[in-house]
Length: 158
Image 1 (cartoon, rainbow, N blue to C red):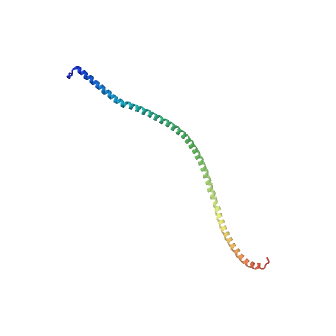
Image 2: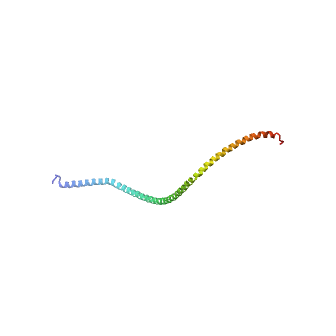
Image 3: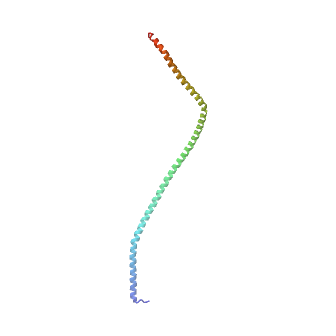
């Protein structure tokens, strides 16, 4: 294939093209170096920071697990104590039930006494009325005796 370019000149054109390609590649590589190296450095920094965050999170979760474990132990002992107290309260409520049933029976026994108390109440009312009548009678007697005594006292020397 002859392109109309002499063979010596063709070698110069090929060398020139390869030189130009080499320069373009170098300038492109320099541009990529300006982008890739800082990006690689930023990636390394972000990876180190990510490792630090994961390590801190793991440490915090470890402390949280220890705290929850100790709190669960305390909670379990408190729940046991609460269960014991509930059992004791249950026994006390049973005793109260027996006492209330006993009181109920005793109140049932008080019904005849209540009838006697009503009879006593009627008797007390009658006594109060009688006392009132007696007081009135004493007042009348006082009036009837005091006039003649008043008259008689004037004759006495004292």
